[in-house]
Image 1 (cartoon, helix red, strand yellow):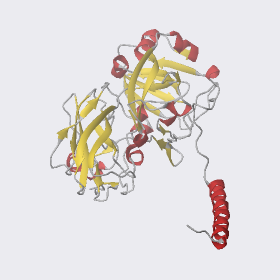
Image 2 (cartoon, rainbow, N blue to C red):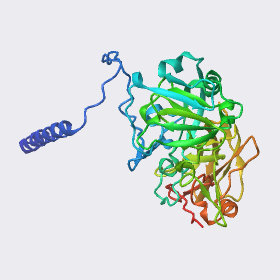
Image 3 (tube, rainbow, N blue to C red):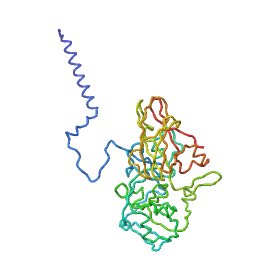
Image 4 (cartoon, helix red, strand yellow):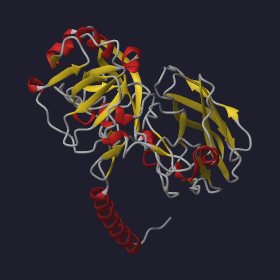
Length: 401
């Protein structure tokens, strides 16, 4: 083939232009990641951090609470820095060297314990959940994540001393049936608790997930009442007083009561009922036609979760999900269910059952039992998520009352 002088000049100009363009594009393009086998890694350091690509965060709700990102987590243990927080007067700063806990009232030997004193007693650990009694976004819009809907529950491994051990040390009177737990925060939160809970599984916790308890969780020590509503688990615990009757504090009269019909209300409704929460697929993720694994967590203050049922047709039919081990008493339990999505619009729901036989109710069932005042505390209705035909997933809204 004959090549003319014009062909050579045009080709040379094109090559030059192409070269300039390629260099400019290369300068703007992000650098290719280095081969980790060819570059020496970072040295060891005093404090570990998450991978730069992993950025789960709590979501603050005003100045008094922040929710756990359930949609971003695995297993049942909540990382300490992602454990939900709820307080009434902010998070106090308490020097553990100055910390003290006084136990008095109907006891033989009133004693003031330091943190070091508490740590001298036999140490125990247990895994259990905590949940705020108001843990439900009642007017949540479709664009709601599991974190926004029910982020005020978390599970940790708690370490400390059994409250029954402390009660033996001070010699609690057999006539004492209640005790007052008082916090050292600005709100001085106080709650009356039956002594029977102390003889069951109550703890004074100073450790969380292998380290000192976090400030938002009550550092340096808190009351832990497994399975009971969060506000009774008094943080920054400074005083316990024994009595033969409840103290009727503001937290159990004007607050934390459950309005019922006929101008009545439930009071001292301590235990958190069985509940479940789907964490995948949920807003804002999308799914594709085919097999989808529905995942979530379930929990109950009455012991173990024995079954979680899944519905993919808005509650018309239910199928048992698989419970992921370990299944622990009064702790989050993870469930999984494999579902073949055909591309049509669907509503997925979960329903928990605990070892007492209690079954998580629908909203209608809650209203039937509690009346129009049911939009308060201890709300554990079955909740659903709408899977649209384009694969997007949104929260299924339901009217209250």
